[in-house]
Image (cartoon, rainbow, N blue to C red; front, side, top):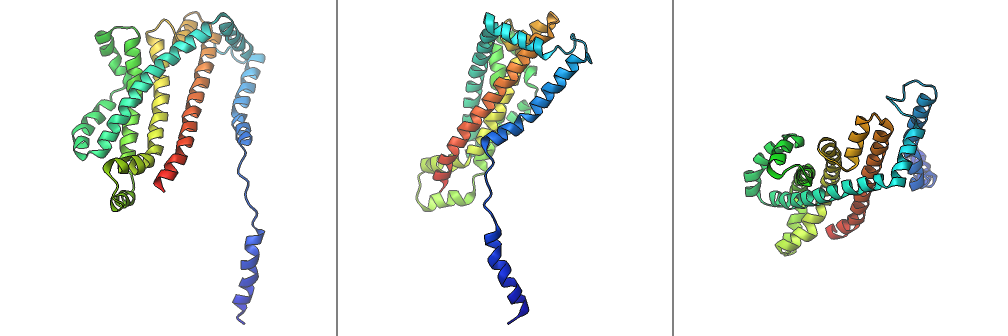
Length: 278
């Protein structure tokens, strides 16, 4: 018997038995790892305040920010401001994302429409979103309308781009399979194209939602008399930085919750996408 074969046999047999199944990381383990950085940041913040490394006018103590949050909850100002901001971002994002999906699908499916609209759309998308604010204020006033339109435009751009790219990136083999199976155009779109475009579509939605939330706060900082952005501007004018930081914490937490909500919806739809593509 060949010596090389003799030595290879025990290795080939023993290798599978030596390998142990890997455990998937637990959800609570991921949460614990993700909490390390915020806890370290909080500890550094507390140490900075306790040892007077920075004056309170620049960095208020965590206790002062907590008291600002508590007072805002107690008197209802924090809840009312949060509801105003959520209403604005909901109206703007739903309108912008809906129109963005429709236009993205149209551009992705129609080469003629893509050649007609894509250059102009790409040129308009290069203009900073707040560059449209003076024009919108002149056209529709300074109330909620320009704020909602800015929020909608912030969501519209990434949704269009990602949706169109997702439609165009559908594997040609799947399209050919649908034709071989005599699928109708509607069946090809709903059972092949749309399920395949779910990941880039939700990438655009997440990016659009983040842009909308950031634009909302910026717009409220500039021209508003209510909302979380207005709370930050009001606290800055009164040199109450604990109020500014309290509003910033609420803004960050809401943004995180919105992102996690969209991610959960995407994971739920992934099962439908997998079944449909198969």
